Each structure stands twice: as C-alpha cells, then as structure tokens.
Image (cartoon, rainbow, N blue to C red):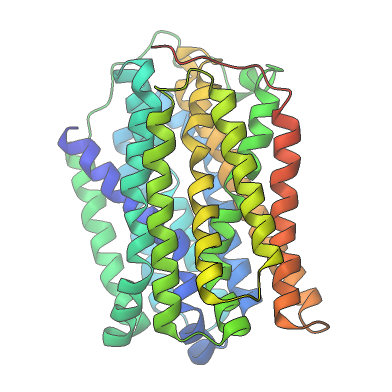
Length: 393
C-alpha cells in the first residue's frame, strides 16, 4: 500500500469513529445540551442518510474526476467542518447538523479506496484488500469506545471534538497530497447508475446489502450505551469496555470474511452463512436481553462479527458490473448499505420512543433488537434467490 492508500485508510478509521461515538457520548450530551436517546438516534441516522445520499454523485466523481480530489475535498470540508459544528453545539439539533456534515465528509473515503483496489489490483484479491481496509478502519470503532470515554473524562466532549476536527483536517490534506488516481478507463464518462439498476441480477444483492449492516451499526453506533445503562445500570466505564469488545469483534470479522473469499469459492455461501449466523445472534440477544452484562457482551460481539460480510457482498456484486462503471457500482452498493443503516437507525429511535413509556426497559430493547433481526431476515430471504458468483482467482 502506498502513502495515498495509507491516508485514505486513516480517513476511514475516522469515518468508523464518527459513526459509532455517540453511544459513548450519549450521557454527557444528555446532561449538557438535553439530547435524549431519540434525539441522538435521529442524529446518528442522519449521519448514515447524508453518507448514503452522497454515494451516487461520488460514484460519478470517482469515474469522471478520480478519488484524490473527491475524497480529500469532501473530507476536509464536511468531516473537519462538521466536527467543529458539533464541538460548538448548544442544542440537540446542532448535533444533527454536525453529524450530517460529517456524514457527507466521510462518504467518499472507503469507496475511493475500493475504486483504487478494483482498478489497480487483481480481481481475486479485491475482497481480501477490502476486508483488511475495513478491519483496520474498525479501529476507529475501538477508539470511539473506552479511549473516547477516557478522553471525554479528561478534556470534555467539546475539547475532544475540537481535537478530532484538527486531526480530520490534517488527514484530508495529506490524502490530497499523496493519493494517486488510476488511469482513466475508456467510456468512463458514459453510462450511469441506472444501467446497473436495470440488471435483475443486482436486486437480491442490493436488498441483502441494505440490511446486512443494520444490527451491527445500530447496536454499536447507538443503542449499546443506552441499553447497558437502562437495563443493567452500567457505568460509563463499563459501557466503554463493552463497546470496545464489540468493536474488536467487528474488526476481527472483517479479517475473517474478507480472506474467506479466497478460500471458499461460493460468495453466496459465505454471505448466506454469515447473515444467518448474525440473525441467530440477534435472536439470542432478544431472548437473553436481561440476563447479564457478560452474556450481552458476547452476543453483541457475535452480531458485530457477522456484520462483516459487507465486503463479500460488494465483491459479489462487482462481478456483474462493467469496468467503466466501477465507481458508480461500488458507491451504489454503499448507498444501499449505509442508507439501510441510516433508515433503520432513524426508525429505531421512533420505535423506542413509542414503546419505552409503556413497558419495562428490557422489553423495550427486546422489541428494538427484534426489529433489527426482522430486517436481516427479509434480506436473507431475498438474497436466497440471487445468482452465485465465484472468486475470479
């Protein structure tokens, strides 16, 4: 990996951090600016929806302009700018604005890396490289757990956010200096994402992509903290430890499923197996939601591991779209993945607000977890009708 890829990966580490840190900051934001769990669910969902909404224009930009300018400029303006807005928040809606900006800023960085991998490396290693990138990026999840808890205790949440704004801007500048665009493909200025949507083979894959990441993103990025607090009365330190363990599990999942694509020739088998295991993990979490912190940590970690079939789903879809639509193809997949996570996070906030006043906390979270599991079940059923794709290597 050259210096440009290194800085794109560092940008992705920050992207993973930003999608998950609200779970740890939730108690402080509630005290300081009156942000409720429903407010933060909405803000977290907006991050994903803003991220997803940018994928179509980013796909066009990757194919037509290239990853260097696309990633560095958006990450600087949206990522660093949004972190600064967040740091100055005095009302819950200010957090939502900051999260929307950060979502826009983070939206191109992973797909810029994937575009370079797809265009500059052998097809057989795409899933492995993509999985390693996701695995390294998940250290952002780890940083947003216990390390962030310690930083907030030492410097406050505002000081921590200002430091993040500075780091984000520095990474964006270095990415602009060192990323190198692959050579243009003939016809890269032709066609659109509509050409991909016209392919019937894509739709079962897109539906699976839409829900694959929903439980892991929703639980790690938002609901783990409130769940542990309201059901078990966990301290901030305990929440930090549990979310750290889940983050490590998510990182491990990426290192497992990405290389698995080179061992098991059937991508469909990998994806179905991983998501069925994830569904079982969510179902067990529903059943044992009130058991203990240890049991919940184990099941949350299992959910995190199983969400890592993301990269194999992209590799599966990539085998069906033409080379000159590479940028638009990978971002279309990301649109469905992040859009699904954002949509279900926003809906989860409404669901929780509707049921929590009328039932015990543990029952409210059982309903919430079942909601995430039902989404994955729909995806599995649709994906069962997909056409398989073998590793090109």
